[in-house]
Length: 149
Image (cartoon, rainbow, N blue to C red):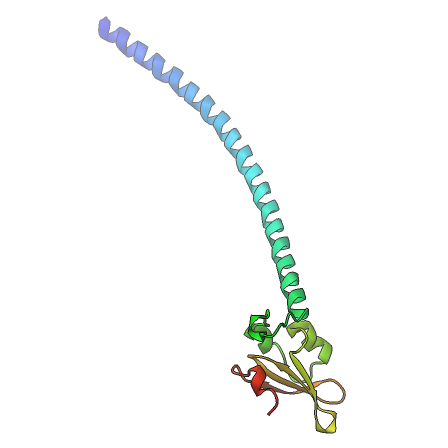
């Protein structure tokens, strides 16, 4: 009789606990799902903020570059990158080049109205009288002293 009572009680206890665990699990699952949805919304919002900040930083870099913050030391100036330099192609207009690289460090007028834009540590860009790129001379060692050759 004692064994039968223990078995009956064990079966009752297991059944009761199983139902309680199922209720707790369903409640927890809903709570966790709601939390995940909130976190996903927050993550999406943060991603948009980061992209906005990144875009703003790019604009700030471009603006600073275009301000030509030259004191006596051009190497301290915010420089256009080699990636930007590689975007320049023959046939581009001056405005396109300026939008990519900013204003040049030096502008020179040569024979037959050929204009040269010099970017220290990158090279020279030559424009025809119509304002289109006719030649790109890459020279990573180009320094202010070597401009007038």
